[in-house]
Amino acid sequence: MGAIRRTALASTTVGLALIMSLGGWTAVRPAAQHHTPRIPKLTFKGTITTYAQAYTPALPGIKLLPGSPKLMAFENVAKQFEKMYPGIHIKFVYPAAMNSNDVQAVEVDAAGGKLPDVVWGQYIDFNSVWPRGIVVNLKPYLNQPNPYVPGNKAWKDTMSARVLGQISAPNGAIYEVDGDWVGTAFYYNKNLFAKAGITAPPKTWAALLADCKKLQAHHIQPGADIPYYSWWSRLFLGNNLGAKTIHQLEVWSKSKYAVTALGEVIGYEKGLLNPAKNPRLTAWWPLVKQLYHYWDPNVTDIPVLNQPTGEQNGQKLFAAHKVAMVYQGSWLPNETSLAGAKFPIGSFAFPAGALPKSFRYGTKINSAADVGGPSAAFQYAIATPRADRTMTPAKFKAVLAWVRFFTAPKNDQTIVNNLGEFVPTMQGTKPLPSERGSALPKGAKYASVFGFSDVTAEAHTRIFNLFQEYVSGHISFAAAKQQYDSIVQQAVHQYIVTNHPHIP
Image (cartoon, rainbow, N blue to C red; front, side):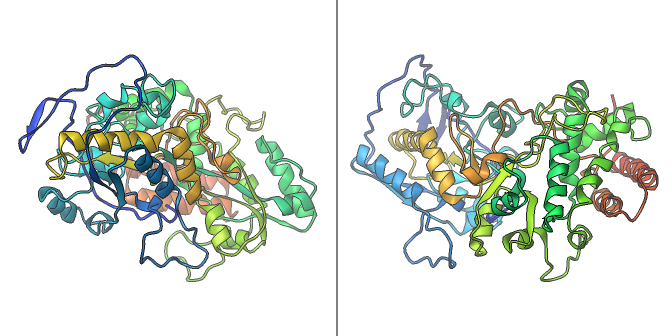
């Protein structure tokens, strides 16, 4: 998403939590600590290599695109650490293998002990794709204080509990520290809102529609974007199904923090997610259609697949001052600025829990953050000696100190906001003003339900196209619901035939 270079690298680990010997190097389970220690003394002298991915500072010899921010926040944080520990040098690297989407290349580098000391990767890669034993299980260290955060008693307490829950491996290990969030929100042009007499962003669904009317009355196009079903389904179903149903679906999904295709299929077989029996599966469609009544129809109708080259999509129209708002990802303000736009941008979250009173299926679940997640760029692990032949016990202590230092909330906020595409998630951090609507809400429950669009690839395309046809006004709700029921039934049958899941 956004400007991030996605990698299919993968990993998992052997934790330094266990006493083990790797190439003659022994790592011992860290002793439990119940007090905040002083700044640790480090005996290591030398270079710590760090792959920071999208947060990599401007490196010598690298030419930036016109208008691109010259990232220096991570470099400045590194200089602070170097000043604290003379003799240690932080070197930012951009390894070809790790940035090439080539898992085999990473495996080769790891086998040769050539991984950087600090490794970037996504938690799914660390948990299930990368070779075992190449990054450290950090969970034992998360229970220790972070000495660079005054008063801290456990490093994990500086982090979002929701993020930690989502990035945890099935075996309970945590292989990375994660300090940013891919957010989504309604982004709006403050100048156009002011022109229509709108002095504050809407906080309810009814107010959102009322603002659309005001903008239209002032000859301003309210908004434009493609109605992504997988986004809207997560927002509405996460809210509408209710906590009891969500919990049951999570149990069937064998996950504490997500509803998977397996959970949806079992939910269908059990009747909870059978659209013919549970109206909550599609009752929210008319609400979305109300919104898109005010959206640019030319963009609403853009095909999901085989999109025409150079189409005037919502993001481009927003940057060109042609529409007042879009529902987009947290990368939008930065990319809008790079496109030359010079107007102030604001944002507000999906009004979960503030749906119309006439809508019978709303609940108190805050699903505003169900689109997005901890899959951005601030995702860092520490290489084991097996994958990094320079990693000695003394060096590991220094690398751990470095990771703790740059994840301190004030440093996390500085680094993440310098890029301007995501929101920081460490406790007490604040996003850029334009990103406030996409920040991770307090108490937000991760309850993503895709509405079967994630069960099979065919179902994803068919449901997306059907939803788009309905929102665009090409078919009636009754016809759309009938087709949806049929698509879901076929998708569930295909999933069962292909995967032979156990239906309890």
